Length: 340
Image (cartoon, rainbow, N blue to C red):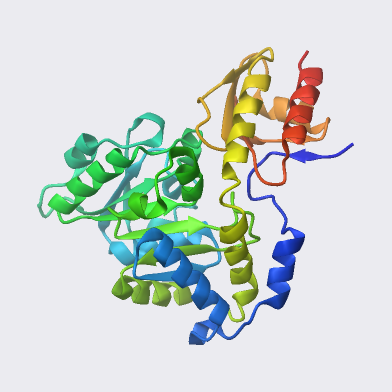
């Protein structure tokens, strides 16, 4: 029986076409700026997001941390949502690496309001940290893959600009947001000083993210990348996978979104399963009653359906390019057997 792995959209494996692109990649030493495939990817993503330059890094977490380390200084504060990935799932890196304080704000389904952001900006005083930046996450992982309305992003940008603050867009699943909303990536990124996309989530590449921004910021970001050990050498073999992903795996994201809705509708009928958030992209969360989430995940695993435990009573499923519609239907059938 086939294992159906819905733990994350990071579990995908390179397709034959992507492997061929990797094998054919022209490479050089990227730390010396000599890898042509890396440069092509960086230029491609910078144009996609409407920024001057891009920087290829190994992971989304590194992209986020380099951005925060570029935009804020030790003892300064960055505003973010209370469920933000940079706050909850990156090992307290802003404090450990840069001495930056994160201030958590509420917001329905991970989406901040301009009023809350403005109200959280610290007054100038010796005893307050300086508020330096606002971080937003689109789609928002912890809120069920929610998609930011474009006008809300613009409102945050206007408030930030009026107070001299920077904005960072964690776009780990930004292309999912674009597929769901029809909004262009450059429009989502326009209010942000710096913005990133991850290539190893819904886009199916084996590794890598690209951080973009103004040239002077990317120069500083490159220095911080080296400090963190993220300066890879013949990285074109990974960049080629990213280019292939942009060429072949963006248009199909809507299929993952349709499968997420299918999964929510099917498993949402099971006893004790309640859809926690109406799926807007490729993430589906279920709130459980009557059985702990870890135990429920074990029962599904026994039937070779894998999911992530997101809380004591919360399961997360992610649809992706290696999970077909038939796989999703089969996962629903096996779950029905496990919980009938």
